[in-house]
Image 1 (cartoon, rainbow, N blue to C red):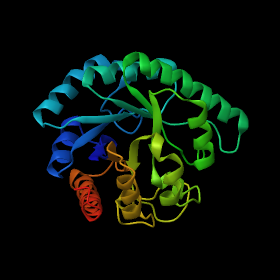
Image 2 (cartoon, rainbow, N blue to C red):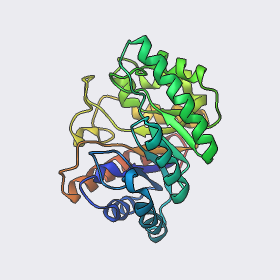
Image 3 (spheres, one colour):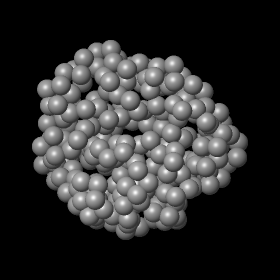
Length: 265
């Protein structure tokens, strides 16, 4: 497994800051944030201007780009994301499911949209991943399985985020068994409680909350998962660099220890 940081943790700082301190914390790679309003790292409206700098930073810091996160399913925006991914050597694009919880109409719309986007991803030679998300049409294991059953493209996979499954009142460790063969990316963070939001950035650091992350990583290891595991901490846009680094370092240490215990490292 490859450990990375979603650059949204450093959303209040420039791209080089994200690369520099991701390396300093010992991570294997980085996930590029293209999330509107949370960062200015990869701005898709001007991706042709952004991608040369991202390529240079990846080479300068010897830090592979493991994935990109772009939440919208807008066709034009997603095509820009796929084009940018090709330019920076990014194999995976993560997006949100959209729609509304327990709304059959928007669930069907989400599945159809994701199917079209998976076909587009295939044409660019990249992989599209989606995760269950609190309050969205795909929000728990059963709705995730419906999407995975409907979309069989090899260019489509699951981005498994234990914090959202936890907040759907499920056990993320138990939920893994039903979907593990379709997981192509993991977003990871901790969470205290089962409220709508994941809590403060500090409480999203691995080991601070209620999720059995050691068990979660152990099950991934036992099932032979070898893809990216990217720390995704939101809400730190106004944080000074030192606070962002502390969260990244604490979380990496926790993940490293978990993987060592199960024999992955």
